[in-house]
Image (tube, rainbow, N blue to C red; front, side, top):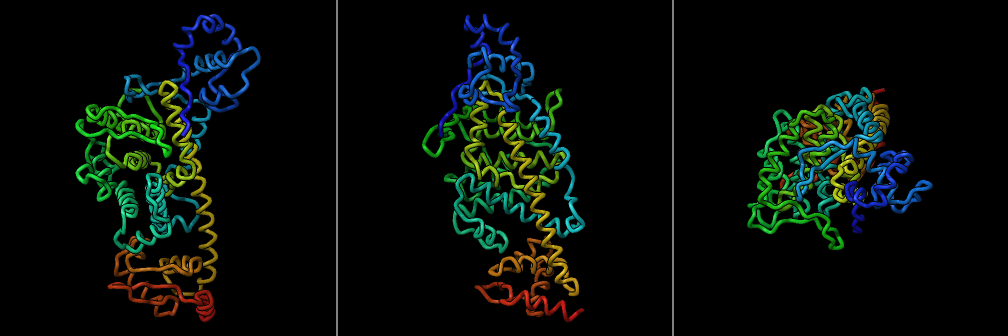
Length: 446
């Protein structure tokens, strides 16, 4: 990964006699904090043509002066003691407003999605997606198909990658119960222990900070470039206490809850307090903070899926923050855009699901199947090689194993599923001519 060029600081620019002398002319040109509506880093700005009459350094000086008045500090401190800061330029305010409009509350897109059973199905699918992609971001190599089969069937993980995904799924399902009380170090340790059980080289490192006598972790890119050196281990207990105070609303200045959630993510990622699993913990804390503040729709949206598509952009937003006076606006903007795209993708997904529900409902409207059976058959029509078990059906719909067993046996009795024995469990597969059988079944009731 190419590291961005360190941005010149405002004090450093003003120490140059030539730039100090040009300040009145620079301010007269009135450069604002944005360039063509974008919050550009020096590394990008220096490759653009500056406004007429200004050098690149003068242009950057004007931008830094404009940004200085907007920046606010947060309690997070860099290794050298400098404070992290953030600002709220127009793109940030626009994104926060959009998220307030579209991410608060429960799913209310259609009558089908208002149904609690439908919401449970979508929630389980989203939790699975986030668990898989969050783990893949940190090296898990299992395919989505295999991982989904493992989670829905309830089988034991076969390797470290599958264990990472199972751990992430369990952590995501535990988040709701962790939103009712303030964030504490014990809650952070609890999340880390869930996320890393049976995946660490040192099993004893689960659920605890790195110690001063241990080799401190660093962030290293795929090409071996060291991109981040976190604070010393001796500082971690105090930093964790400060992070929790920040998450719980510490300080007198109002901070938008979505911005706070993203900056909490940044804080954990910067401190990197654990031997492994720091990225997963950071994203879990983001989700927890969003849920605690009432942004319930985020529970159904997978952030990690989008981060996985372009991990370099995520890393660059972190590096831009570190190389421009710890201005977290870069990280804030990137993650707000990711969050908006995740919500937009979710809404498009729900539209598709609604169309599928309507088509399946039309086909099955004259049958006496329950909503769980209809959902399973809709899935089976799309995926003829799907495999269902009592555990997977119970997990998908959050019902008892007895209810799940009754559903599956009934569908087998009707000839819509076929049963086979694998080891000590039953597996159910769609009938080879499932659609024809459904058409026949609905015709018989007409």
